[in-house]
Every structure is written in C-alpha cells, then in structure tokens.
Amino acid sequence: MASTFMGLNISYSGLVASNAALNTTANNIANVETVGYSRQIINQTAADAMRAFASYGCIGAGVDTLGAERVRDVYYDEKYWNNNSKLGEFDKKSYYCAVIENYLRDERGTNEVKGFSTIFSEMHTALDSLSNHADEADYALQFIGKAGNLCEYFNILYNNFQKMQTDVNDEIAIKVDEINSVAQQIALLNKQINMVEANGTTVANDLRDKRDLLVDQLSAVVDVQCEERTIASRDGSEANIKEYTVMIAGGQTLVSGNDYRQLDCVPRASWQKANQNDVDGLYDVRWKDTGMDLGIGAQNVRGELKGLFEMRDGNNDEAFHGTIQSVDGINRTVTIKTTADYLTDISKCTLPLTGGQITLSGERYYYDSFTMEVDEETGAAYYTFKIAEETSKNPTMVPSSYAGKSAHIGEQVDYQGIPYYLEQMNEWVRDYAYHFNEIYGVENATDLNGNTHEGAIFFTGDNSVTGGQFLLNGSSVYDKSFDSSKNTGYYMLTAGNFNVEKSIQNDATTMATHTGVVDGVAKYDILDNLKDLSTNKDRMVFRGCSAQSFLICLMGDSGLNANSANSFQEIYANIEESIANSRFSVSGVDSDEEAANMIKFQNAYNLASKMISVLNSCYDRLITQTGV
Image (cartoon, rainbow, N blue to C red):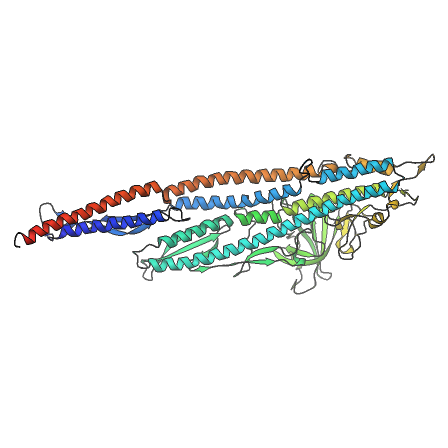
C-alpha cells in the first residue's frame, strides 16, 4: 500500500528535477559565448513505480534526476577535425604563396617595384647606349652598373627566399611545441576525467569540453583521429575507467590514456644538407622516444605542419635518386646511376657542394664530395660519392652487397616550394652567365684599350670562403663531367653569389666590345650578339622561352600555386563553416531556445511548488481537523 505522504515525495522529486533543469539552463545561458562549450541538458527518467496491491496495479513514484549531460555528436566532430586539417594546410600555403608573389612583383607607376623585367630591360637599354657609343668608357661603366643591378636583384631575391625558408622552419618548431603542449594537456585531462567519472554516476562535462577544444586546436596543426574505449576490470566486466587515444599524422599514437608522447625538432648540421640551397639548421621532426621520423611528407598527412613542410622542402618531386652501381670499400666511394633529366644536366642539379647526407638502401651515410660523369651513348649520369671517413658520421663503410639497391638524397616532395624557386633562379643564372660569357670571351675579343680577352668571362660568382671569385673560364653548363672538390665550373654559381667579374668592375675600359677592326672601323659585334641573347631562343632557351621570359615563367608558377592554394583554402573554409553550423545546431547554446526552456522549467517548478502547497493543505486538514 502506498504511503499517505507519497504525493509529497512525488511533488518533491518534480521540484528537484525542475530546479536542476533551471540551474542547467542558467549555466547554458552563462556560457552562450564560451568557445568550446557544449549545451547541457538534465537527463531524467520516471522513477520506478510502486506496487499498490490494488486493481490498478502500480502507482507512479515521480521522477529521477540522473544528472546533467552535454549534447555532442561525434560524427560532426570527426568531420570538423578532418576538414580543419585540410584548411590548416592550405592556409599556410596560401599565406606563403602570397609572400612569393610579392617577392617576384614587378610594377610600374605610383607604387613602383623594380623586378626582374624592369632591371633586365634597363640593362639592355644601357647595352643599346653602349653599342652606339662603344668607344666611350662612361657608357661601358653605365652598362656594367646595370649588369651589377641584375646580379644584386638575384642576390636579394635568393636571400629573401632563404630567409623565408628560415621563417617557415622556425614556424615548424612552433607548431611542434604546440603539439607537445596539447598532448600533455589532453593526457592530464584524461586523468582528471577518469577521476571524476570513476563512480559511474558523474559525467565530467566541462573537462570533456576542454579536451575536445584542444583536439579542435590540434586538428588545424596535423590530422587527428580519436577514439575512446572502456577499460575492462580484472574480472572481465566493464569498469567506469575509459582510455582516450589521440592519433596524428596518419595514425601514429600521440596520447593514450594518461600517457603521451613528445616530438623533437632535430636541426640538421651543415654536412647533413639535402639541397645545395638549403639554409643551415633545417629541422627534422622525430619522436623523442623512438627517434623515428614523424613522416610529415606522407600522402595521408594533413594540417599546417604539412603545408609548412611542403613550402620549406617542396622540390617539384625532383630530389636525387638512382641505383647503386658499385661500392669501392678501399677508396670509400659509391657510384650511383640515374637517368632523370634534371640529374643528367649539372645546371639543374641541387646536390650540396660541401658534403651532405645520402640514403643508401634505407641507411643514412654522409659524403664529403662527389663527381658526375654522363655517358654520351646512353645519356645516363653516374655520380660517385666520397663517403666521409669520420666514424662520428659513418660508423661503418657501405657494404658491397648494397650494389643494385636504391639510393636517394632528400625526399621527393611533389610541390613547388622554396627549393624549387631557388633551383629555377640558379638554372637561369647559370645558363645566362654561360651564354653571355661565351659571346663575351669569343676569339679576338677586344676591349676599349685594344687588348684582347679571348676566353675571358663577364659574369661569375663570389667565393664566400676565399673572398675571391670562382674560376669559370673554360667551363660550360653543358659539361658532361663535374668534380665538386675543385671549386670550378658553373655549378658553383648560384643566384646568391652571382656577380660581375671584379677586374671589369674596377676598370670599365677592360670590357670587351668587339672582335677587331674591319676597314679601319671597329665592328662592335660582341655587343650586338649580347643584345640578341635576351630575345633569341637559338642563343639561350629557358623552359622553352627566351632569356627575358624568366619572370613570366616564375610568375606563372607562383600564380598557379597561389590560385590553387587560395581556391582550396576558400573551399575548405566554406565546408568548415557548414560543419560548424551543423555542430552548433546540436551542441551550441541558442539564446532563444534557452529562454524558452527557462519559461518551461519555471512553470514546471511553479507547478511542483503548487502541488506541494495543495498537498500541504490536504495534510493539514487530515491531521488537524479530522482528529487523526
């Protein structure tokens, strides 16, 4: 039989439930602008009915308030994280592509910026003036100055790109620190959540919101996958403890329960370079516990870290690779055969001159120098690397069994990043300097003083080690052999050290202008041929265009890359907005909805209070006026 005061207990349970709902509504309203907060609701259910031992069987016992729980849909979380990683990648690419376009600008008018086309045109205008006044040193001096401006343009552009590579490298370190910090915080939250939820009745809503917000932040940096599973107790039954796992970069574990792993940025030494144009100290991102590479370059990796990596190391899929032909243990050399077009042309090669890191059959070794020979019959190039003797670099010599195995230097990064643009600059500078010097140092080349300069050069490169300039006389960009230890040849020339030969800078009268005198009149054929060099593709071809089209080619590359990055950035930003709206519709706090809930739960509270008041009157009549 039901208690006489059962109605009072039922009304009280309704009062408690509506009060809890009002408090939860107040909490939602207070956090309407809180980033990462998930809307909470009161989870309630009808209390177990009581048996009445009467014809109607059971009597309702009120309502049980089970607790507050957040409203969250994992489906939208996963879609958001997946899209956010792609958005982060193209955000970074879009930003740095804009920087590259700014470096390559050539504008005239109010906001004039002198770029390649303007400077190159000014040099040829000065060359025209010189050809009309070839016997006057002042005009020669003017042309030499304009040629120096062209060299300075490439020097500055080269240094700007290298500085940008340093900036990107520093940002990679910042992002790695961010990953480490987030991993530590998530592991701590995992521990706190399990402590709060250990009794099986309480849900750590706010702590879970903080954890999901951290995963949101992490997903912009690198691709993320998360899963949560209940840990079984020793007897095999389910416990209230859960293990939350966070995986990044294609499924590598970052956080597992209370444990987390850390990443480390390991700077490359000068002898560990993978590219001739790389700055010192580029970071390899590795796991601290295993020393293994994170593998940012993998196809399934996304996020800001991927965008930064491709911008820093993007070589248009043109890294050194080949097959090991032979190993000479006595002379410590390894010969590698390659047939790639960009490796059989030394002017397009990007191997470090002062030694670097080479991977042979999956093992890392270090070399001091290399030579290159092209087989004119087959067209294949054979690179012979001198393996460093220091045991700190190479504890063991390369086994002879490696013959026939693969070899590579650096990674094939299929993106036109900073190394690609630096290589394009070097290629143009080497080609132009060679063809200019070939015309300039022709047989019987004569200067204003009547002295001959056969075999002389006009353009060369500054040697930062000796303080002098590289000896390019007698060399060619078409050389079928090269030795990096000799410091000669056009491979030594880069956009960063491009310069006019010192003796010509010091004395303009030593500049060769013609090949002799015809009928008592000087014929300035050298100057005419130099003018023809800029537009005549028979004299010089750069990517199928003439010499003066350098900027058009690079602006085309940068424009395509920028348009692609901007388009994808816009697409993923729109998708993110759509997903965020869908996620907000589930877990976000809507002011109008909460206002309606406030009125609804207020009415419920008032009704429960009224019910208690009515029952109080009934009990008063029953107890005080019936004599019970």
